[in-house]
Image 1: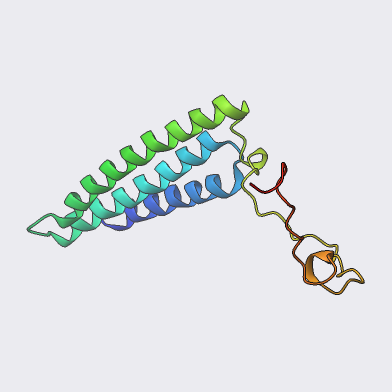
Image 2: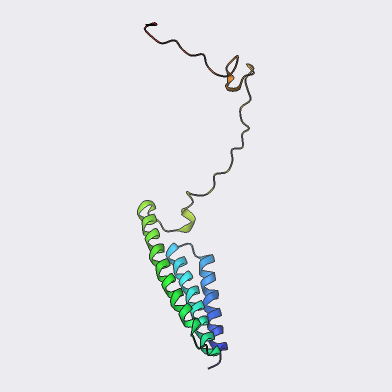
Length: 137
């Protein structure tokens, strides 16, 4: 078997995964597309490991690591998606914009009043202390 066949298949799988990540709005489909891209990487690792006849089988060992990381990513991702669905009743990415940056206000800050002191109080900015009730003891 020549190395071109699995490389072309991996490139096709990776391209489909990239399209899924960029074009889909559903969080579950985005996670599935990421898994598809990781599987394309695994296919490349195993194919080049066999083609290069590596004695230590480094490509296959890395494939096992990628599989473990993909399983952890999928479990954590699905837990986050379920938590978001319980709170918001949707898993659409476009509707989850609550943590987006707030644009700065367009109005300038209010000017200092005629008293000249910061805070608008005449003579220094801090209010005078009020005497205690009930008189001194």
